[in-house]
Image (cartoon, rainbow, N blue to C red):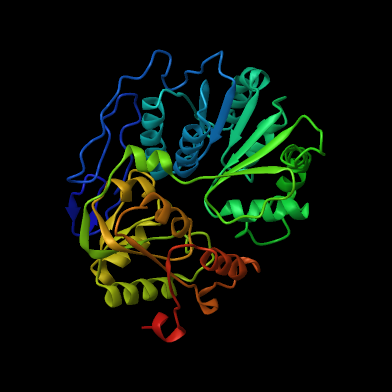
Length: 404
């Protein structure tokens, strides 16, 4: 079965399942069945899709719902005011839908939100950069969610802001800090190859400049670099680390109603070419059978074809969340046991669900599951994600279990 964010069901995953709400300001928020809608506060004047407060001193650039969630957590912890959130919108429909919902929550908190169709055609990048340049020149502090993003790296070369803050972009933050400490080029952990293709070479000067901006200034320097993270990281000297405890999420939502059955959290490791699809499907079948799971919370990047197979082979109800899982789980209903593969949620859900009876378990990725195209760093990175998770149960997965 498939369940939309509103909780309706169908017999299979159909094309268009989980299509985001109509992208217009004021569109009613979509929600899980039985979950009370949060109070809809009236957006302040000037907080439309492309509004930006001229007096704003902090600019935040986000490209995913999790990044925007963590910007809201940072703003709550830092008591930041005069914040303008710039959404560099991707093209993926599920991501856009979740970003629209998160943008509503950001406006509810009193922040200005500027929505940029940053990838809407060949002229979009120049139009976006040109429109943002005046804001970048005025900003005194820049908050970013993805230091690996070429878009963000380009924008960092245009600002004179002396204070930079990096908020979590999931487990990628761990790799970013490791590369920053070693003085390496910023390359995503799952990316294979040399990273020296034509586009890489053209963009290399911008990437190098951004890396220098993200490197702490020598002692006594006027530039500061901060990290707001729930990940287990050891930042290099000069980087101020503030722990993200998901205080805003816990204060704003919940506590959740708990169900008797277990829930499984999906991952996009198949879609990124890291894990073999057949091994992944077998692992999900075994997990569901062993722990009595009934629902599967799909990652926003999981393919419809894969989800259709999961429905047919496991009988799981597929849920396409319209918000990051930390918020969905906090609002409920959610299972007393949440099963996940190595991913961001094994670090964030225990924090978001602090004070509840929900348990989180993480299933190891067997090296035999990796594809021939997986990055050589993939296994070590995934093991690190699992091994450093706190307050979770670890489920070793043998090859025999993975093959059913």
